[in-house]
Image (cartoon, rainbow, N blue to C red; front, side, top):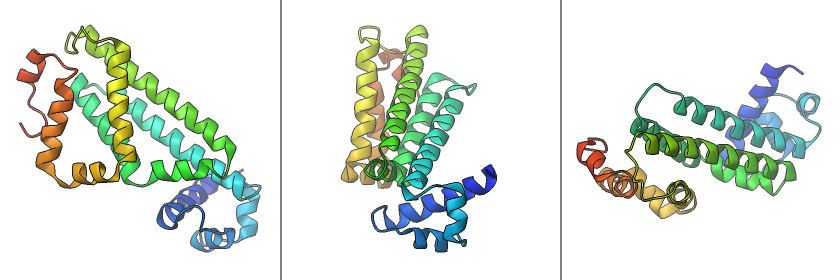
Length: 200
């Protein structure tokens, strides 16, 4: 398989599915959007379900690579956390999170990939938490599990609540105050006094 050509087809299919929705797209439309023939697409993907699986897998694996790259950056923990939250938010903002949830309905394999995505996400958050506890900038009276649940709850609320997501993206003052409020619940008071992020 020509990996480059396959990836181009996946990327263009992603654009189309985000734009028009999974349920409304035919293989003819995909071929037309990709400026190719159905026969060419079938050279790389057995059928529509297989294409959807490949698209879902590609989206989530690329996102996990981005998250891991953020965690490995040579910056302080708060910058890593901010960059991670930004990347996770962008996953929802660009329509990819919604796309993956729709693809699950069309291919059971995508659900398994999504479970792998969530496990990888959990490992990344846990790694950040452990760094924070080791550096004594996260509150030690909170367990690792509690901090993880708190962060994960915030992520899920952002992903599933359109009104909240819209305000976070369009009201800078609200975003800055709310993020400082969220961070103050898990970071030490001393750290928050010294911290000058989110509009400070």
